[in-house]
Image (cartoon, rainbow, N blue to C red; front, side, top):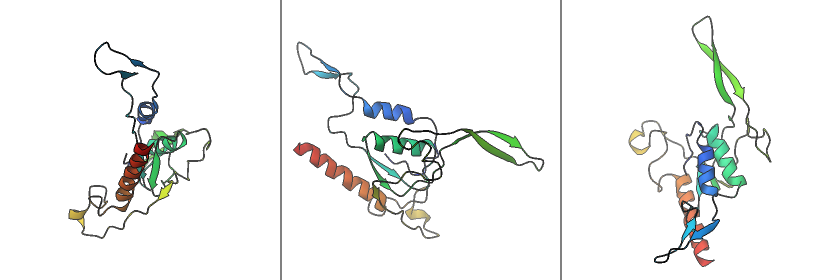
Length: 171
């Protein structure tokens, strides 16, 4: 789950809900194989690795932090920037510019208001690679190197995911 460059929004409850579902029972058909109830559960070998960096903000930070607190994901990357408040209202100034101001705080159990101005510190810290000017053909729209061989955060996330999958298969 690549949250780098995620500026926020309101989708984290949907993702948390989908990833945290657990089986309550099973459908047992006369013919065929049983299926879990509810039937839209994540797979038995669910492994989620979340990549964050200094461009992850707001709801992206809340999502990464929540997944880590619920032990639903391993967080890889660099510390997020710590901008989780909601700025909805704004006022126009006399020079034609505008200023936005906070309308909602973001409070989470365990950290309270601790994400604001601090951000999410990944479980596995991997620095963003430097990008040289004029390297447009080798980077994506967010300025990150393309492909896991050139992106150390993505490479580490894939490595962690494969290792966790192998561990689950042994259990």
